[in-house]
Length: 281
Ligand SMILES: Nc1ncnc2c1ncn2[C@@H]1O[C@H](COP(=O)(O)OP(=O)(O)OP(=O)(O)O)[C@@H](O)[C@H]1O
Image (cartoon, rainbow, N blue to C red; front, side, top):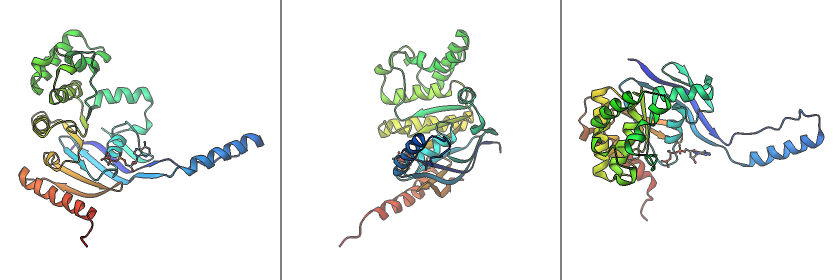
């Protein structure tokens, strides 16, 4: 199967160690540099990702779960060009993202990736139509094509009647559908979703996941999603549990029914929760 993402041995270290180099031949500058090193090195380093390997194939629906601070968002950002890893290699469609310049990264994101965030990130002074059109306008797509594509995608995600409204006139669930339409409008190879239902109630969360599932099944859209919610995670085909920056466990759904998969996920997450509880006296 075709590989969309191949991340090999990636690590992310925040607050890296700085060594002042006495290369200036200027004693005042050298003292100044040593002082800077001293201050910077007081900031503790965090190993947010620790030698992680991850491969995502075309048509996958992968979910990343794990406790708060375990490195879920860092992993998502590291493999989606938002914040590259400190060490290791990330290939998207065979292209090494570390070797790209800013302009190339911008074009690459536009061409290959669609982002969905918890906070929707819609522009409030633009209509729903205009919000979805943003990526196409930037790519100088003709007005006629923009219209055709927006009507098509609006139909697929169920927001045809909202196109003339402003985001402030839409509900949370509707706003997330708009954000999904905007993410899909360029036909990206990969949808990257960070807690896409974090701002929604459970009914809307399930509707959004049904939509993502349908897009994955019927349109072959590849999805990589972070969630802390076991029920939401049970929509995925593969689950990665991350712990202290490492992939601690991988769970494949295979032929399992969603309920059965959910029970397996619950078993793992409740075990984690149990470890946080103190024994009774
Ligand atoms: N920009 C940053 N600078 C320094 N440390 C950071 C930065 N971003 C994240 N971290 C640290 O890296 C670790 C992983 O953070 P990350 O946001 O990936 O966790 P997470 O699993 O997504 O957490 P949550 O579920 O709470 O959103 C944490 O210890 C966090 O404090």
